[in-house]
Image 1: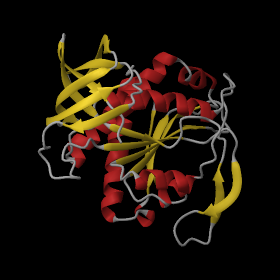
Image 2: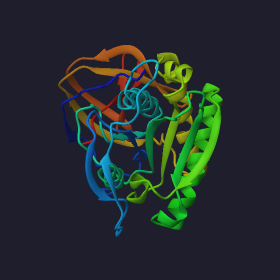
Image 3: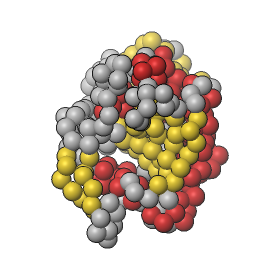
Length: 305
């Protein structure tokens, strides 16, 4: 798992950057992850979409595992953090709608987080429920053409749903329930970027509920989802999550910085770190900087200021 790096930094330009001021040609693709639901639902009403007279509750607390007793909002955050780690290890910039349970964020507001971040894909993580304890399997939903902001958004969302589901099924062996277009979900209707909603499985199925809570299965699920997102971004959108460019800066580290190497499309920790000191970067890829260390060239990650 990619370790979190908390750095307080001050950066002084050592040499003029290659790009013009304010231009970030090597910016990583942005993925917004929304762990579905929250600890306390909010039954206040909001329009289901722009200009709609129909209203729905802002957000619910979701379903609950029949075997584990685990609330859906807990499960979705657990898996979402695994996905975040795996995408960041590929070089993506990840924006989370929440990282705690004690929040109050409506479905409309979650869509706005993705829009404000200009996300290349808005990924909503959920689990399913049914009146029958035998119902099982995973599905991926996407916004219907009638509620999509543009025809392009609809096409991209549909493609993302198909790719992510295929990779998720391949990684976990979960039963596929297919993809489906929906026009009744506020998070879809308010979104201005391509987006999908992943139903990972049924918490009302005792066996699937227990499986969804195992760390091994969550890792496999996250790997499948992250792999599908990566394949969508590279094959459909035509962007690269890893695009290093020459970039010379002097960086003052005031806290420890873990060192990574880039191997087979992944950033892998080497098990060493730098203490507070001043270093010089010679390449940049999104929030990652390449510096020379006693181990050779290593990458460190800085917060996006």
